[in-house]
Amino acid sequence: MSTTTLQAPMSKSREDQDLLDHQAQRRRLVWRRRLLPAIGVATLLFAWWAIVVGLGVKPFIAPSPFLVLETLYAKRAVLLDNLLPTAMEAAGGFLLGNLVAIVIATIFVHNKTLHDIFFPVALMLNAIPIVAKAPVLVLIMGNGVEPKIAIAALVCFFPSLVNMVRGLDAANPQAMELMRVLSASKTEVFFKLRLYSSLPYLFSALRISASLAVIGAVVGEWIGATTGIGALIIQATYNFDSALLYSAIVMSALLTGAFYLAVALLERTVVRWQPEQAH
Image (cartoon, rainbow, N blue to C red; front, side, top):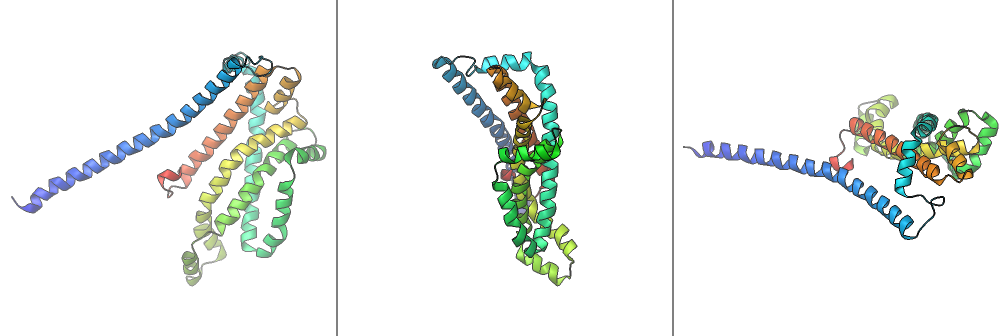
């Protein structure tokens, strides 16, 4: 029997073993991603319960996790009815704020003069606390859904603008030079090079915006609203209903988590060239 004939099965065996090792490593990574967050949440809940019970904290000050869980179930209809408008406001602000940020970032990258003029203005507007901007928008737009969407859009706008500008400028210099040599137009350079290089930066900003959008919508509801998680938080606070207050906070956190997971799933679908660890 020739040496080549002996080496073929050995090579095939090594490839099969490498494939099995890779699959096992991926399974361990998946379980790690699921198990560690679960451990973190369980630790937080246990610490919460231990502090409330150990220090004898009164329920009207800080309810136990079990009381909050009971309230979530008992008042689920009220919580869900108020969650829907907040989710719509946050989603609208998220889409509007990021869309405007992408458009302006594109303009800034192609016109440095406009960037130098208006980027400090955007920075100054972002420096104004959201609780100070919210009443102004309510006075201008009224007490409807529009100011809530606008507030959510404002808090999403600046992180996406900064990351998108950086991402569009992060295109590989050698690739940019090659595009110039090939006489590519600005449109071709943008869609075939700059846009792809900016996607990891953009999705990093979108992850941040996913939580900020919910915060913006809730703050907008604090200023003037009769429905929504923010309005429910204010009502529960004035009524000293701490169990409902904490339940509303939990619902807002769950909404934020849902937004974040949606962005993460979209990133995995769109940015497929990123290494597995990046996700």
